[in-house]
Image (cartoon, rainbow, N blue to C red; front, side, top):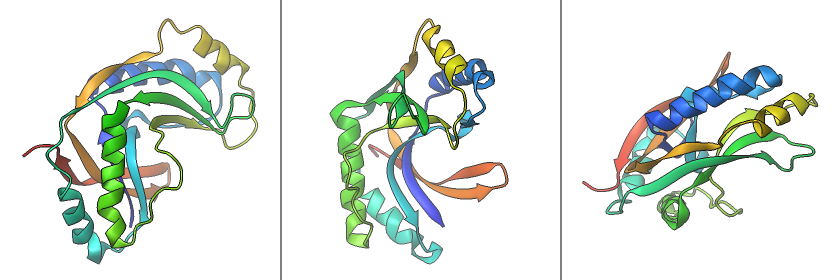
Length: 183
């Protein structure tokens, strides 16, 4: 099974992003993310044998005793660049606390043989993927006309282990375990 860890968005932030996506979807034929799938990934684990799932949950349970992480979702951007983008995303602001969480997840999983990420942690919410060249002028105009690109703030007090399963209409994410920051 394919696994990752992540932080769930608040209901308010999800509602605000739903309004954004409802407004922007007609502007470009992209592979838009459904709001119910939006999350802040802290670690992509990849393929893992179900019989060893307990090892991962035990390792992640060791990450406790931290304060809530103040997270803000504001700003929109393109990856790798605005001229030839492959991803349209919202910026996630979690400061050192979110970066520390991602680092601690990596440290907890490394003894299991799960490789550390080579790139610096860069939290974001993938709103759409751009698989082929499509006109983006209308989308860019829609983004420029937005009154605000602040989608809200929330305190994260837990993270989750998710399973990602490919389905006919895209990936389906299922929460397998919950890890509160304090017990």
